[in-house]
Image 1: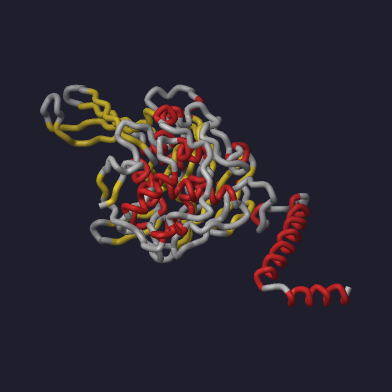
Image 2: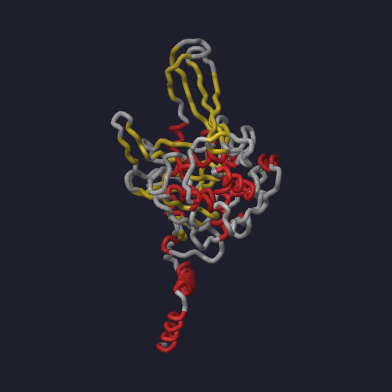
Length: 434
């Protein structure tokens, strides 16, 4: 045994350092995969103990932290593992990447759709290697003037800003990936006690924000959100100032329902901010029929939980990571560049859960959709995933590839651009920054 080992050491000395790292990495990976297979056969095995994934692409790549960008990383992971969104972002009415990128280089602006397409493709094509979200991290203030590297931000705020930028890439009235996948509708039912006038006011829904301070579960939070409340106002019909009954209901169920558990509280009078650290229970299956106007059985009202964004720590020093469910029985924990096999208990019994992503029953799971094993197909697995957007598409971009020679490198290091914009007809994506 000694002689072979000495020969191995002498061989290492002859190799360049980069080859040594690759050799050690390969040997370590093989060793870990072998040990993982033994663990899986052990009745006492817990998925969270495993530090390396199996060979097949059943989960996307980890994401390097570019300087307090964990809030961005968790949203990118959740979007990458949202199958309808991946199909939608690739099949929507948006120009060919080379055309769009050339425009934005010339104009000094930035395209959220092209950046997300590139990131998603990189994550799916190199699942065993963490990716660097350089373009997104260097242009954080494109999404909001408050965002920048090395500064803590809120993951829910980042998600909404990304959705806003995507939406603005499309003319009003044209289907876009955000409204098609995440868009639902709330209706505010208002009834005057004086004249009995009924009024229903629809509101766009992208995520549902739930107060949790006085509840113990998501079910209780939804009941509180949809309960009848009394408001004092002047009735437009009878012109009398008095009491009205107001109630929010879910009138249109989105394909993907995002719930925000409002853990961050602001006291306006004292100008203080606190975090609510408590367990708010939630289940892997959610039925929202009780919170709809008709309260009837409908498959559209039943959802499967598939992603949980977690915030650990406090307001001054916190960290985001997420749990992602890639098929009916398998969870993964994604913590920046580290991707490990997880378990349902850890994902569901978490007192730090902040965002809950739910998909309608029948939505393809990430692992079974095939998007982690082949180039993304523009045709969605579900009929309703992007039909409206496909009808508007002028060209069929069925396969998007990561650029080997990135034409955007010229301005990757230039940082962001102002967060105001005007619609520019000359822009391939209808967006130009001031």
